[in-house]
Length: 233
Image (cartoon, rainbow, N blue to C red; front, side, top):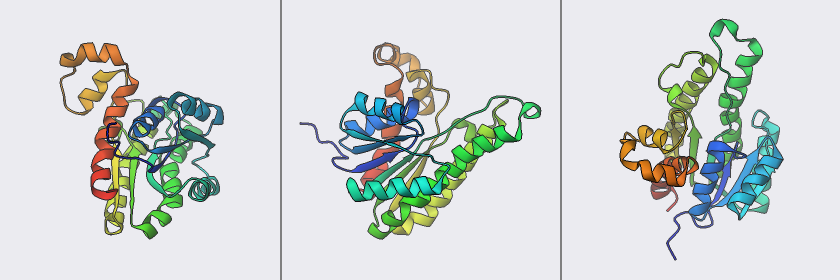
């Protein structure tokens, strides 16, 4: 049997009811992790669990510190120590700045930035006590380069990148690794290979055969495995 590098490591993933979160859940499960799939929509979290198998679904409101602490405590108590945290929950509003409402702005920052802050704050005390853990935050290329008609999303992802850099410095003495996963528009393997600086044309047959979800699995693998190597051995 192939050696699975995250065997029995407990991984908490937010926003894992669909899309990138579901793909990260699959990637970590394939490496043997015990995946806790969380989402604001419990039914979608359950769908992910059904698809990947061997996981647990929980409802989590990332904008609530009470909800984040409750889920973190429940996982530690019933499943085991959280060694991997994937802050993936995110939203976006597309409109020029003059058409945005205050509610649009708050919605993006509450989920994309405050959500990462609150869930991380709920999880890291136990990681710090054990001096062991890895955190991956789903940011975006929009968090590195400005994007038109995406001001609140782009600025919130700049915030995720900045928070990740601060956390990496603050947690390095606690043996906890932190990284930000900056993806481009996800349509298929093309975007994943562009994100990794590769020419996707060479891989067109593979792209057509495997589909978009594995592109995220590859990106998540590139991000998680170095953290595994240095912080979870």
